[in-house]
Image (cartoon, rainbow, N blue to C red; front, side, top):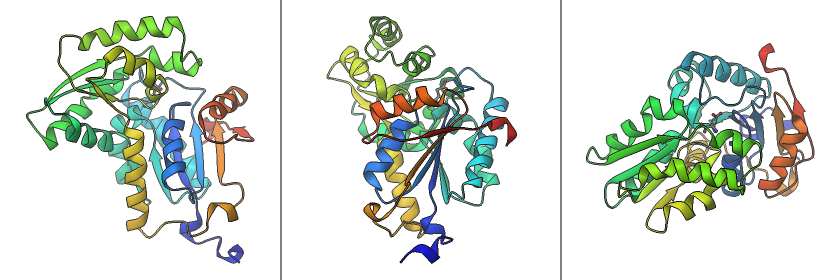
Length: 279
Ligand code: DGL
């Protein structure tokens, strides 16, 4: 029944990308909140981490990935990476003729609404923290909110390695989070899409008085609103669609697949490796 309507933009997939597996925490939310949407995911596993790289490099990588995603005819793009959202999105937004959103703005908004003491902590990559973008966006909502940031560069490789419940990860986390001990924050943004995978550890170390904000949930809601506004919602129910989710990486496809299967609500069958430098 829908076969001849394939070219309709609403039937096209959403493109989602990250430097590696972290963006899957956003994909998980998109699957929950917009179950009829098809997704093409790209994880840049050959070039992870992005968090220690310069703006120019992150911009170049992001442009290449977007060129690849456009070959898949995506109707909208989600930058499921805080680092790329912080450093590349402002430039890329001006270059695209399809909707694109990142994770920083939705995360900043919810944190500003959550804090009661007007004290917010942020953990993220060095690039995200140094960009100070969360601070600017939170203070744009309420200039009286005090923001304390801490880069946690070792978290990304630990997560990519799958060491989610390892004593080494626990020690590293305790050392990083010590920064917030005397600070009285009541809200902590998990400002890197890899970090929600360490949520229970971070939550335990921070204690019950600190609310953890995972921007993935708000990003998926923002995406839902955006495609509704743009009249881009896929009208076909998921049970009538095949091959809804496609996963691409730039390296180590099997390892990625295993990881994805441990955190997504269903098992992915294939992950394809592409040479992203060709785009
Ligand atoms: N997951 C990414 C982020 O949200 C990047 C981690 C990295 O590649 O350093 O910032």
